[in-house]
Image (cartoon, rainbow, N blue to C red; front, side):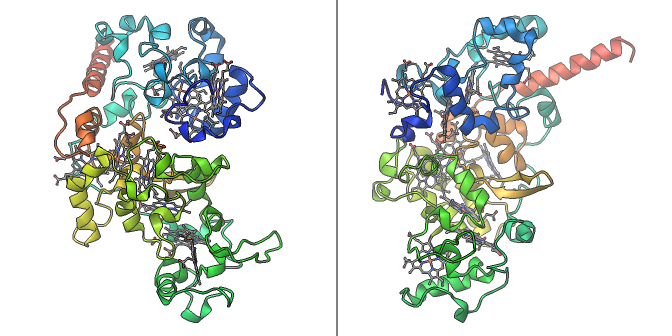
Length: 430
Ligand code: HEC
Ligand code: HEC
Ligand code: HEC
Ligand code: HEC
Ligand code: HEC
Ligand code: HEC
Ligand code: HEC
Ligand code: HEC
Ligand code: HEC
Ligand code: HEC
C-alpha cells in the first residue's frame, strides 16, 4: 500500500478490493466503488454539489480548473501528509475555482477569505441541509433552548404490524409464556437468561429463541442452533438497523466481509479493558434483555475513552438523561450519547411509508457536524445557539458543559439579506 488510508477508511486496510476492483483502474473505476458505498448521500437534495450539477454543459468551463465529476479529485487516498478532516485532499480555499466572483454577487462576502468558506456553520461542499438561506431565515428568531425540549419518541413496537417483510407467520406478535420457549432440549441455559428473555420486549412480542438462534432456509425450515448469533440473527426483523449499522464505523468491517471491529484496532482512544471486544448488536444491547437505556450511555463508555466522551457525565445533558431515566423528567427529554450519535430520524422505508428509526450508523451525522443540527439539536435548541455551540471546539471537548464562546455570522448575514430583499421589493413598488 503506497501510504495509510484516511481515518474514514483505515478499517478497510485488509480489503484493497473494496475500492480497487479491476486491478488498478484510475479515477472512474474507483468512483464506482465510492458511489456503491456513498452514493445515497451524493444526490440532491442531500448534496448541494451533486455530480449532475457539473454534467450541465453551462458549467463545463468550471471543470477545467477542478474536475468535480470525479471523487478522487478531492479525495485521493494513501496520502496522509495532505489529507485533512473529512478525507479532503484539496486546499481549503478550493471553492475559489468556481466561485471567484462571489464578492460581486454578495457584497457581504467581499472581504472574506476563501480559506473561511468552510468554517463551521458557514458552508459545506456536500451537505448544507441546515445551512441554506431559507432554513436560516426560518429559524433565525428561535430562543436558545425551546420551551419543551424533546426529541421524537421511538415507534418500532407501534409500526411492527405494518412492516411487510416481518416474519409474523412464524412469530406472531403476541406475548409468550415461560413454557413457550422453543430452544432444542440439549441447549443449556440459566434461569437468569430465561427470565431476562421472558420479562423483556422480545418474549412479550412473540420473539422465540429460534428467531435469533436458528436461521431458516427458503422453505422456512429451521437450521441448526447457533449459540452466538451475530447481526444475521436480527436481520429478519430489524433489517434497517443492521443495514445502517454496517454503513458506519461500528459495522463497516462486517459489511466488507472482514472480522468484526474491535477497540484494539481503533485510531480513537478506547478503554483498555474492552480492547478485544467484537462489535456487533450485543456490544451495546446485551444478549437477552436488550436494554436500550443502558445501551445509550453505559454501553458506549465501556469502549470509548476520548476526552469528549469522558466529559459527558459532568454535562447538563447527562443530568437531563438521568432525570428522564429516573422518571422525573418528561419522556424523550433526556440527552444521551445516542440522542446525538444515534438519533431518532424519519426514514423512508418505502415509497409510501416513513417511520421514526434509531439511526444505527453513528457516523452518519458526525462530520461536518452541522449534520447533527437537523437530526438532534434543533428539536431542543434554536439554530443560532446550535451553530455557535458546534463551532466551539473546546465546548465539544467538554461535551457541551458551558455556553458557546464563538459567534457564527451566518444568521446575521441571512437576516441582512432578507432585509435587503424586502427593501428592493419596496423600492420596486411591490
Ligand atoms: C477506500 C478506498 C481504497 C482502499 C480500501 C484502498 N485504496 Fe488504494 N487507492 C485509492 C485511491 C482513491 C487512490 C488514488 C487514485 C488516484 O490518485 O487517482 C489509490 C491509489 C493506490 C495506488 C497507487 C496507484 C497509482 O496509480 O499510483 C496503489 C498502489 C494502491 N492504491 C494500493 C492499495 C492497496 C495495496 C490497498 C489495500 C492494502 C489499497 N490501495 C486500498 C483508494 C483505496
Ligand atoms: C466499502 C464501502 C466504502 C467504499 C468502497 C468507500 N467508502 Fe468512503 N467511507 C466508508 C465508510 C463506512 C466511512 C466511514 C463512515 C463515514 O464517515 O461515513 C467512509 C468515510 C469516507 C470519508 C470521510 C473520511 C473521514 O476521514 O471522515 C470520505 C471523504 C470518503 N469515505 C470518500 C470515499 C471515496 C472518495 C471513495 C472512493 C475512492 C470511498 N469513500 C470508498 C465506506 C466506503
Ligand atoms: C470538488 C471537491 C469534491 C469532490 C469532487 C467530492 N468531494 Fe467529498 N468532500 C469535499 C469536501 C470539501 C468535504 C468536506 C466536508 C464538506 O465540505 O462537505 C468532503 C467530504 C466528503 C465526505 C465526508 C462528509 C460527508 O458529508 O459525507 C464523504 C463521504 C465524501 N466527501 C464523499 C465523496 C464522494 C463519494 C465523492 C464523489 C461522488 C466526492 N466526495 C466528491 C469535496 C469534494
Ligand atoms: C467545480 C465547481 C465548484 C466548486 C469547486 C464549488 N462550487 Fe459551489 N456551486 C457550483 C455551481 C455550479 C453552483 C450552482 C450555480 C451557482 O450558484 O453558481 C454552486 C452553488 C453553490 C452555492 C449556492 C447554494 C446551493 O447550495 O446550491 C453555495 C453556497 C456554494 N456553491 C458554496 C460552495 C463552497 C463553500 C465551495 C467550497 C467548499 C464550493 N461551493 C465549491 C460549483 C462549484
Ligand atoms: C432477540 C434475540 C434472541 C432471543 C429471542 C434469544 N437469544 Fe439467546 N442469544 C442471543 C444472542 C445475540 C446471543 C449471543 C451473545 C454473545 O455472543 O455474547 C445469545 C446467546 C445465548 C446463549 C449462550 C450464551 C449465554 O448467554 O449463555 C444461550 C444458551 C442462549 N442464548 C439461549 C437462548 C434461549 C434458551 C432462548 C429462548 C428462551 C434465547 N436464547 C432467546 C439472542 C437471542
Ligand atoms: C422475530 C423478530 C425479531 C427478531 C429475530 C429480533 N427482534 Fe428485536 N424486536 C422485535 C420486536 C417485535 C420488538 C418490539 C417489541 C416491543 O417493544 O413491543 C423488538 C425490539 C427490540 C429492541 C428494543 C427493545 C425495547 O425495550 O424497546 C431491541 C434493542 C432489539 N429488538 C434488538 C434485537 C437484536 C439485537 C436482535 C438480534 C440479536 C433482535 N432484536 C432480533 C422482533 C425481533
Ligand atoms: C453502539 C451501540 C449499539 C449497537 C452496536 C447496536 N445498537 Fe441497537 N440501539 C442502541 C441504542 C442506544 C438504542 C436506543 C436509542 C434510543 O432510545 O433512541 C438502540 C435501539 C435499537 C432498537 C429499537 C429501535 C426502535 O426504533 O425502537 C433495535 C430494534 C435495535 N437497536 C437493534 C439493533 C441491532 C439489530 C443491532 C446490530 C445490527 C444493534 N441494535 C446494534 C445502541 C446500539
Ligand atoms: C465494543 C466497543 C464499542 C462500543 C460499545 C461503542 N463503540 Fe463507538 N466505536 C468503537 C470503535 C472500535 C470505533 C471505531 C474507531 C476507529 O475506527 O478509530 C467506534 C467509533 C465511534 C464513533 C466515531 C465514528 C466516526 O465516523 O468517526 C462514534 C461517534 C461512536 N463510536 C459512538 C458510539 C456511541 C454513541 C456508542 C454507544 C451508543 C458507542 N460508540 C459504543 C467501539 C465501540
Ligand atoms: C449533545 C450532543 C452530543 C452528546 C450528548 C455526545 N456527543 Fe459525541 N460528539 C458530538 C459532536 C458534535 C462531535 C464532534 C463532531 C465533529 O465536530 O467532528 C462528537 C464527537 C464524538 C466522537 C468522535 C471523536 C473524534 O475525535 O472523532 C466520539 C467517539 C463521540 N462523540 C462519542 C460520544 C460518546 C461515547 C458520548 C456519550 C458518553 C457522546 N459522544 C455524547 C456530539 C455529542
Ligand atoms: C432533548 C433535548 C436536547 C437536545 C437534543 C440537545 N440539547 Fe443541549 N440542552 C438541552 C437543555 C434542556 C439544556 C439546558 C440544560 C440546563 O441548563 O440544565 C441544554 C444545554 C445545552 C448547552 C449549554 C450547557 C451549559 O452548561 O449551559 C449547550 C452548549 C448545548 N445544550 C448544546 C447542544 C447541542 C450542540 C446539541 C446538538 C448536538 C444539543 N445541545 C442537543 C436540551 C437538549
